[in-house]
Length: 337
Image (tube, rainbow, N blue to C red):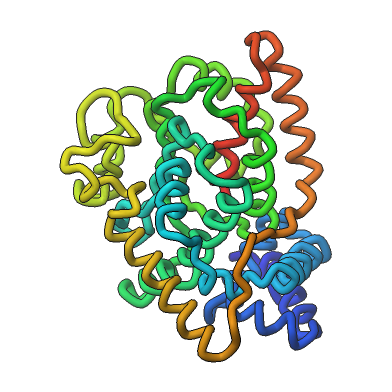
């Protein structure tokens, strides 16, 4: 790390020492004992501009307080039948760990429908996944390997990607804004697998619009992705849709739900849901939990993201159905925190 970067960290650290006590408490939930690494994430997100990184971090802390994010893991989605419906239509899960210890997050972009619950429930579930990752999964990985692990690997399955099936622009854009502004720089590498032709055509348009540091993180794997992914993870950690040769499938696996990390019956989701129920019981002993509809304030999107989306939409008019396609592309950015 160069002298300029070290000085930027020092300046941001000094600014953070002056924030209110209420902000410091939620800041501890973010950094989990690694404040310097957290400052670096926000500095990277703002191209090492200290005032902009400070503004971004303080806004993030205020957002957490205003929306009670620190206690969101004590507010499981109930009844369980509703949570199962969310899991069946918002396809995401932990399939294992890379050889270097990074959690491997699998995402079924192409077959996620977001049509079995309200938009608020999908936003709630997404934030809970983020918080569980940051407060439980990553700290456990750090402890196991004896070194800081603060990012994950994401494998995005494009199987089933259709323009008409992913026309959830507003919901996906809302989740993207939550991630971009409150969970920056949490992904080590994105692997995009099973891309259909329409994705490949769009990628040529999108790639030049992305920042260089983001482009370096993205790898599009054509054909069978298994061999390439086995270079960085063991077979047991491969997402189920990457285990067979040829095209994958986000919904099917060799051994049913035992391998399908999207399913509520998968060990990861069972652990997550049981953890939230335990947290709810502990919190109820201190103070009654407010049950009812969960709503979170969606941050205004980054102006650069708006500009990129507008450019994509105008460029994709030639494909005949730009709205559906933009929804698909936003689906990629949803998980790109």
